[in-house]
Image (cartoon, rainbow, N blue to C red; front, side, top):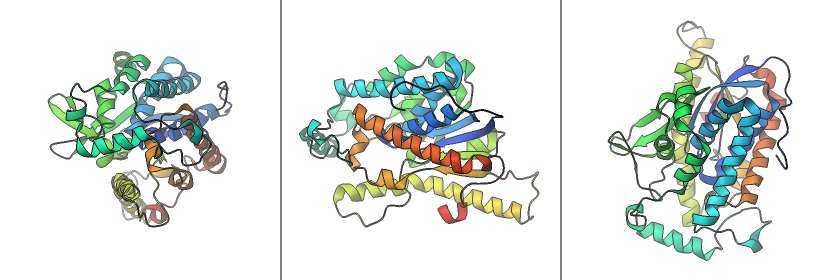
Length: 349
């Protein structure tokens, strides 16, 4: 979406879908682009969203924008949110993208002295040591963008945000009725950067460890059978990583994808039983799974780019998300409500 926001262009009857939005730091701007194009098209109605980390922020802003003024306002709200993230980073973030590196394709911060220093500090000190006052600029951005009390009372979609209970290791799903700044921050709480978020006496870290994102709330609570997963973490990354940073990044990608892949295997198993007539369709819900992703784009990005909140980079990711969403709409819109547009067994088994 370069320049001004265009009005939605879709026509005809709308098809209901649910969205599953992964997290991945600033790479979440890719999801912004996907949402922007889906909203602009206008032929899909979003019944519910399950989301984690950066996906949880996208989902919350999306819901509030829809409440304020439908698809067009939701697009504006997402644009305003990511612009606010970029502006906040200019004030608070020690991570800087060097001006002379603009135009490179990895968008990494590896040549930034401040990033190198911060990387050392994060390996030696916990957020309880280097940030004892528990400052979190994301809190201010969310507070400025969203009236959470209004959203709790009038949320226009079914909203589910995933977080990890630090002490039990179990997933916590915050629904529309629970939505608050703390719930969003909990879903996005990377334990090396932020202190655990306390809610009702329990403490939470990033939801990506146990659900990135969780699919089951959409199965249980949404009427639609169609779930569109927007991937941030590459499932396939060719080549064996050899540097410590690349190894740690791939470990995180695999672990953050593992819960989603387990759910996909369960869905594939139930789907097989239904299609073979071994269980009654009235007893089990056959899910139709769709996927919007670009492993090629995301794999080409530097590990450190997940911390890059430069506006040009965020817009690059947005545009990549729009391209992938456009391709998915063109190829798979007719599949919505009829069949899965991916082979679940081939993709996840």
